[in-house]
Length: 126
Image 1 (cartoon, rainbow, N blue to C red):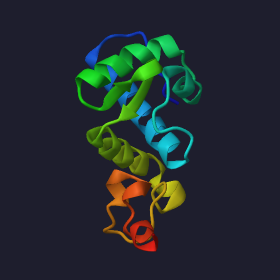
Image 2: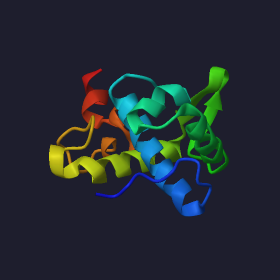
Image 3: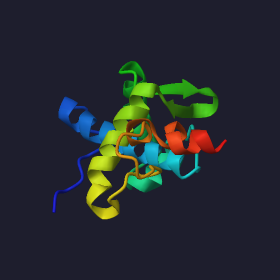
């Protein structure tokens, strides 16, 4: 079993690891209706690390265009972050669910990459 990288390591490879983990958790939180713009301390328990370490990665993710900072230390996924987070989440859990988180059964639906709010089935239901 691979040991979880140190969240305080500032190497580029380590940042990519934490960025991908954060994107997946934020995508999942959004899909579950837990938060559209969580704070670092709301994400940290799902990654078994501390909020201070995550804040450093979140600030870099702002600079890289994956998240947008909001008031009160909240962060929201950008369109790029939502797309990448959805792809990462799907890859990680595809074998367990046979259907992406918050997705319908249509293999060509936008919810596969953009998240549940982009689901064509849901849009037609309203």
